Length: 222
Image (cartoon, rainbow, N blue to C red; front, side, top):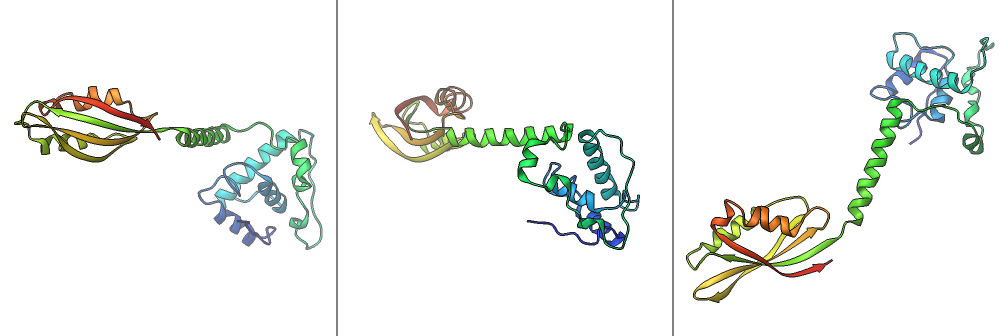
């Protein structure tokens, strides 16, 4: 959304910039942009200490511009009552000019860190979208016919980890009064290893008090 400032040659105008920059480093977004240059060009002088946000921002923009325009400046002033804010900032001349000229010079450490964080977030999102899923059917077998099957299912479903979702289940007779728990689960392949799930969680202590063994009956990619 576009930001509107007016009368930036007045103290009231500078105050509006001060309020806008509360909790922010730049006018728009988290990097120096043409918007900063436009506002900078419209302010006739560095804001006083009464406007700490605007003063800090003004110094930041000035530092970037100094790198891009190394020539010695003699200083200019504007006559008349019209605000110099009416002049267009050089960097806003055209989109083509932005592509051809490095206006801001080298990135600051803060800008580099922000860019790296955005890139990492994009990669994580892409990886999440590309990660496949699998549907698995497991047979969970008790030690004997005296094993509490309700408790057995409770300890199975109590195993939680990112990328694991337990589904429907049922008890299936296997003979001699013994029943096994047949249960469905869905996993995100990059996050859950079926072997790790069985060896380190389902058949390890204390769950092995109820679970004798676990077999994968079916394994299908989704």
